[in-house]
Length: 181
Image (cartoon, rainbow, N blue to C red):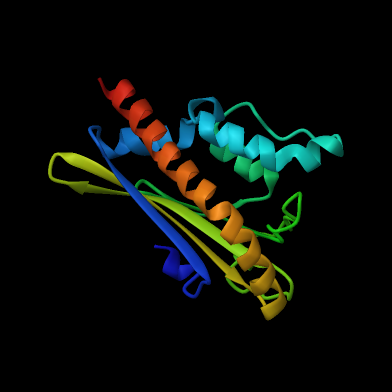
C-alpha cells in the first residue's frame, strides 16, 4: 500500500476494474502496456508535452508505458507479484513538470520546500473468479506555496487525470484478457 511511502497527502485518486484473467497475466499487462494502447493518454500527454517539444526535447513514445515514466524521472518504490509502486518529485504545475531526480530510498523523507511528491500504484487482488486491479495516485506538497500552486494545477488537470487512469485500466484489461484467451 502507498501508506508506507506517502501516508499523508493533499490529493488522491482511486480507480479499479475487474479483469477476466489470472493475477500474473494482469501484472504482465501492467508492465508491458504501451502508450499506443491508451490513445487518450497519448493525446493528453501530447498537450502537456508542447513546452518540451518547443524546447526540442522529445518525450519517450516507444516501449512499455512504465519505462517512459521511469525515463522521465519516476522511481520504482516497490515491485511484488501483486503490486507496483512508482513515484516522483517535481513541480508538476510548471510547464515541463519540473521533475527532480531522486533515489527511491530518498522519496519518503523528501521535504525540500517548493515541491510535490507523487506516488501511484497498481495493486492486484483476486475476488471470486475475477482479478481486481486497483490504482491509486497520491500527491503531497512540501510547503504552503507548493500546496497553493499544485491546487491550482490540480483543478485544471484532475478531470483529464481521472480519464487517463480509467482508460489505462481498460487498456490493461484488454491486453490481459487478450493474452489469457
